[in-house]
Length: 187
Image (tube, rainbow, N blue to C red; front, side):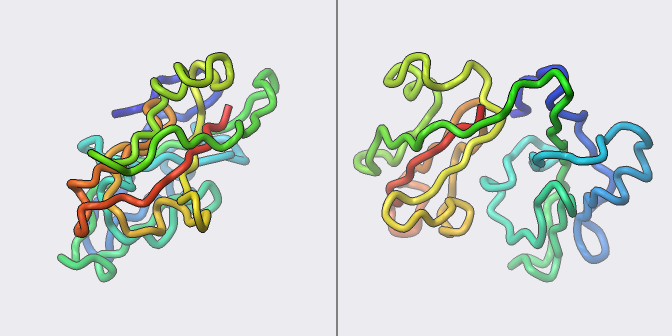
């Protein structure tokens, strides 16, 4: 699901390559050449999802690069089935009129008992009224014990985006148990 657009924050979505040959490469250099003037000189962030709308994290593939300097690279050789999904990317940026972007505090409103760890934005906004902005730009999720980024845990993540927050379902894990995560929305 694409994030809501806010003027001055996100580029359009770009899909300049298909996962043939060595993989799917949505590099910043190539995308700038193919889309003159559509990507600012200094992107602040990147969002990646498959062309069918699955987040990069939920897709569960090994990713070589996903940053605002390089862009995105998924290598076929790194995948168990030797084929990457087809991805699209967009970049965030700040205009001269954008407010200063800052991180909130870490939030841990749920434990991974019952169905999983639900650090979703709608409930966080109810539990912490006025603390989380209306439309967060980014979200970071880490384990509460070791601060391991969610993307590095190897767990299957159902939801991981600024609009909806973070959800890990126990049923999606091999051992039927999510780690306990906390999230930090960026405003």
